[in-house]
Image (cartoon, rainbow, N blue to C red; front, side, top):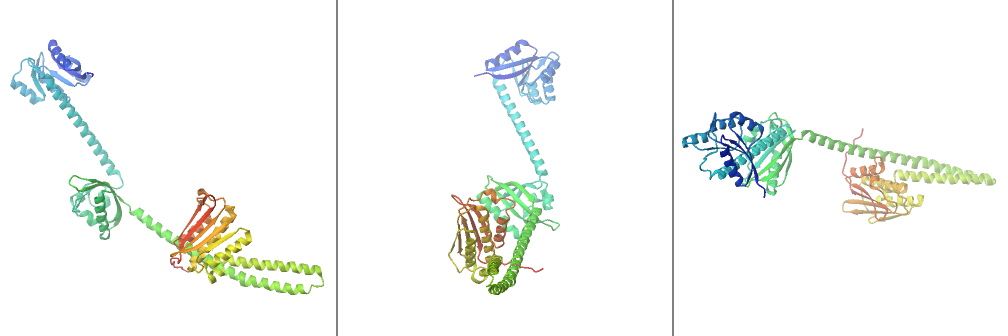
Length: 496
């Protein structure tokens, strides 16, 4: 085990006495590094040159003294153990030296307590140094906290809650003046100013939140409104970390923020979304009305004209019996007329399926799926567990349009060989499931910015208070799952 290092500055004119002192420390196990001085100038130079652990001084030196040496050390503000060791010093002089700042005095004839006295003073010096370091660190930390608290855009606080619910601020940063309209001093001195600032309708939620967080020792997170002296109302957010104190009370250290602007932005955003939803619903209804008008014109006007043309062509063809070439041409024109009539009827049904209004959603989906399979050769199996599902007009049209878009997507992207469709009613919800056995869909496809078909389906479902989920199936294929209320929430339609 190594010796403990110890640096000693000896203020001593007798070299032999200095050697005897150093020998005692070495015998006690110290690795001593020492220097001997005997004049004021030498002492000043030694103190300037390096720090020392211990100063041992004779009381009387030629042209110098222990008392003068002590004053010199004190004038430099040094906290180093200073012991006077003299061969001739009376009690009164020794007491005066102690009052002047010397830690102890010993006689050169009785050095048996030298090592214990030095070790005691070294411990005391170490304790004083550690205390100074701790105080300096605490002050530095306090200064940093104060600088941080004064520069954050909020109010730093310490809030205490007693077991009986009594609230008090232990600390508030100066930002309290800007937030509450009251100084930090006024709020910390008052036991009611905080609660009186909170609006009555929000006060109960704050007290309940504090009680809950105190019981659970959980983080405080509360939003509410306060009224400042000028009469303005502000939204604030209060967040704090809890600590249980020795008396059983709870203290939160945290920050309060003025969130009035963000709350206003949230309310404006919610209003904007509501208006956009109303506009989207209005546009969808206008679109459906226009489709109905076009479908009616195709069915009533164009369909009637095509039927009339077919009748006239039939009469014309009956008069071409004697001319085989004309008869064949007339027959071909009749076939084209039949195809045009069929096409106009299909277009009219796609624009506005009359079967949806006459026979309901299940029948409309079955009819469209059958026509889809016939036109594109893609088998489409339909399972409608409840054929008498009744829906509101908006809901029925929206589900049918989403179904049309789903089949269109299967045809364009899935490379499927079969499609399965399920339409069921679960309590007050309509559930539509469209599954295919194609190549599936990747998540990045769902996030494409130009996926207008999927976006349109989502908007239609959302306007009804429902949702659409599109996800890949295992081992392959894609599933669309639509869930909407059977009766859409009422949205007032304003005419321009």
